[in-house]
Length: 225
Image 1 (cartoon, rainbow, N blue to C red):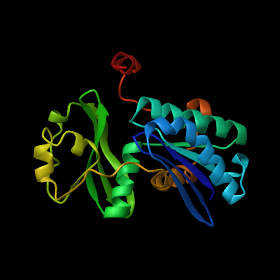
Image 2 (tube, one colour):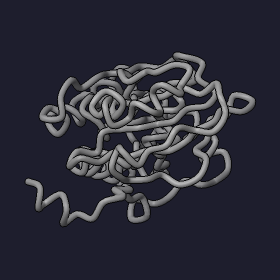
Image 3 (cartoon, rainbow, N blue to C red):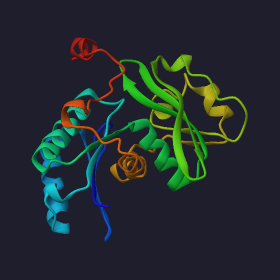
């Protein structure tokens, strides 16, 4: 399976390509560089593998929630490449992407995800990994950090940069968590697991249907700028 992945929902973006020969990843250090570098890095990886967009089986991207500007970048590039190559798009939750990374790199089977949404708010969700399959449990939320409650039971991890940005307000969940990984962010290669499942199930979508999930009205972003 040949898949291209784009993730620019957070401050650190990335592009990844998966083929039968392996996985290649390129990072984007800052939000300001995402628009300028995402196409360049995509072209670099496709050239490295000797592929054109039409040779891909699918294109996956982090559909959010996350940075409004960052999500627009990934969605626009993914839609353009999919239209040129006539390949399906596979939107994947950026929070699920983060949970997948926490499972693969830290073996977190149950996580409370909390990502800085700016404007004094956080994006959050609960995720679990069962039989190697990571999924979001319940809704993805946007709220003040003070409203985020610890998960019931024991043995879960606190994951995401919201726990670093709002450590004081999130003291309760941080104390209840068995581990905390505030340094983790979503990265493109961790979109592949869900994208492969969606592609196998025939859940790829056309460019017009591949939309970002903001959880916040666009007007709120404009008022804050």
